[in-house]
Image (cartoon, rainbow, N blue to C red; front, top):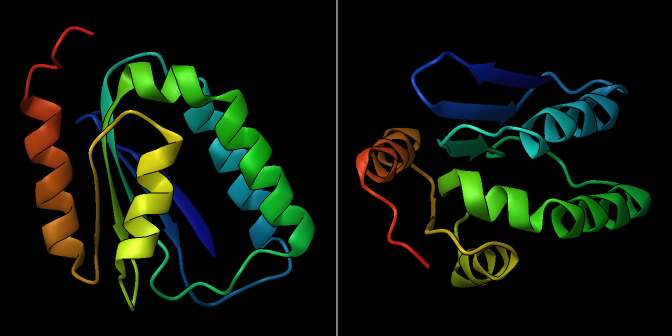
Length: 127
């Protein structure tokens, strides 16, 4: 199941969680399309702790999306917190290379939300 919540508090929360369905990958890319055009400041929490991997085509499509939205995400997103069952430095480095935003990878959803909220309320330094 893929769920995108944008409650108006500036936190964009993308969840990829059980039960998994055949439409998960399609719904995931719909959510990315929505995120990719956001123009107001936000911080993002992506919870993939219970998610299976993307197909090979999905990985290619995700990389293309990241490249196409690089400047928009870097401009509007204040931070990304990624929730994974097994966080590792490689995950953090991979996402940090995509955009010029703070990235935090954790297994704790509460910690992830606190990280996102902290960065959302901070002023972004001028480039």
